[in-house]
Amino acid sequence: MKVLVSDPLSEEGLEILKKEEDIEVEVATKLAPEELKAKIKDADALIVRSGTKVTRDLIQAGNRLRVIGRAGVGVDNVDVEAATEKGVIVMNSPGANTISTAEHTVALLLSLSRNIPQAYLSLKQKKWERKKFMGVEVYGKVLGIIGLGRIGGEVAKRAQVLGMEVIAYDPFLSPERAKRLDVKLLGLKELLGQADYITVHTPLTDETEHLIGPKEFKLMKDGMKIINCARGGIVDEKALYEAMKSGKVAGGALDVYEEEPPFDSPLMELDNLVLTPHIGASTEEAQRKVAIEIAHQVVDALKGRTLRNAVNVSSIEPEIYEEIKPYLSLAEKLGCLEAQLLKGRIVRVGIKYSGEVIEYDLAPITLAILKGLLESVLGETVNYVNARLIAREREIEVIETKSERLEDFANLISLEVETPQARGSVSGTLFGRSDARIVRLNGYHLDAVPVGYMLVCAHEDKPGIIGRIGTILGAQGINIAAMTLGRKEKGGREVTVLNLDSSVPKSTLKDIENIKEIFEVRLARL
Ligand code: NAD
Image (cartoon, rainbow, N blue to C red; front, side, top):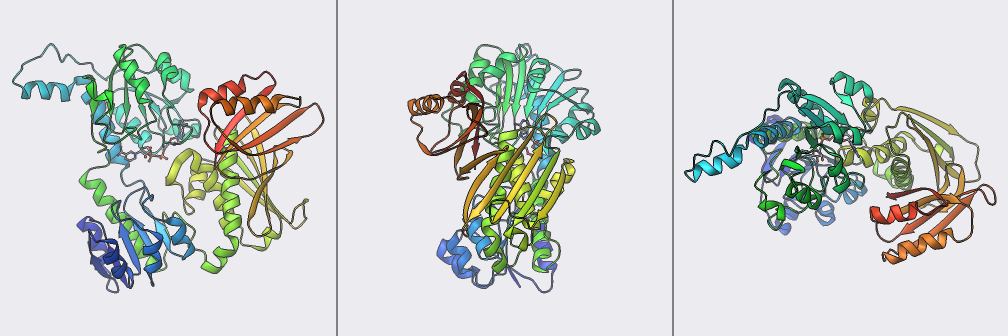
């Protein structure tokens, strides 16, 4: 078997591959697309980092290709759909850079408290400014962690050793994990009001983009300090600039930016902001770990052993995949939609399959639902292989039932999702072979196409309301592509679902929410 490595990979990773007697390793980096296409013809596996563009064309050329391994997290340089269609497994190696990123966060925390980068620069200019660089201790201070996942959890442990009191905001986390980490879970507002330092460790999603904006800065303690070592845009850079200029925020540290590199950003002019060029995961150990992890995973996959961190479902035979593909897509969308509509920590998921769909293996379809549900919270680290494991770790109870009885549709997948505060349900069907529709939402009968931006409004069933929603959207240049309505009785509560051609700014959502007859507005992106 041949493994082609087309981006630089740590020697330790290559050694793992070379140790296998039946595996031939070819390292060929910086190839032009045509050269790579020629080399991939007889390769059984391809290992890349972020440099190689693994296009549909390249995947098609891999006559024997079975596995694509990405040493690292993001698979945006791989055409996963084309790989899946061809039955090629795509895998990544998340988690290998957790410690490095947590350590970098701590390095920023201390640099920021003791002005280390600024003091270094001053000394290099042959100045001896001991008074100017008066610092503060972190000991005894309150650290607020937003997103207590892998990296957030490791930051918490290290901050506790430094004598900090750690509080966190993570609405999707089980209280048990917070308890195990000895971290107090709070609401966002409470955290903002109590923390001396805030560090964000969430993925960048529609929900977390500008999670820390002007309103949030206002709620913070005067003179607090903030760190973003997760993804650019979780902290609103414009609001951060204002908060630092006004003195509300005494110091900050960023490793990631809304636009990278941030050369044109006004943030560059602030002296009390420590900046590093997205190097959170840039350590020899992290690079070694991703290489070792991906090499083991690729060997295991080639030898038919356990599949780890596969981001697609190619463990299914290509012919079967072709058949269930529309159901997988529908299932993932149902999960994704419900997670965005309900919000909060999911504690229970009830899945009911009825009609024709029960003739298929339902396990991958359930995984697709879980992936959809978890992905909007955890981002791209959720995949078809770890979705069930993550659900278990997060103590989400999953109950599946199937019924041969037809419920108005030839096939129906229904989800009922519970959080400690609320419960929501959504059902979808396929018309024909692949025409997906949402047909029920919280008991309301609808006919909505699950695609793009979906605005879901619950309101009184009165004339004129939909017109007003349309006017508000129209004023912002947001086009309505499709609309569906459902109500249980005349004059009662009604649900309107709009498919939109573009996203809706938060302020516009607020304007819609302010219409007196509207109970609730949610925007989902599928
Ligand atoms: P993770 O999935 O283990 O943890 C993310 C946590 O965020 C989860 O516990 C989730 O429940 C929580 N979360 C999601 N939405 C939230 C919200 N709206 N409010 C509060 N909490 C929310 O991820 P991880 O591996 O710890 O990675 C965290 C971040 O670090 C990601 O953005 C990742 O891309 C980034 N990262 C950066 C670097 C770097 O070079 N600077 C390196 C690796 C990872």
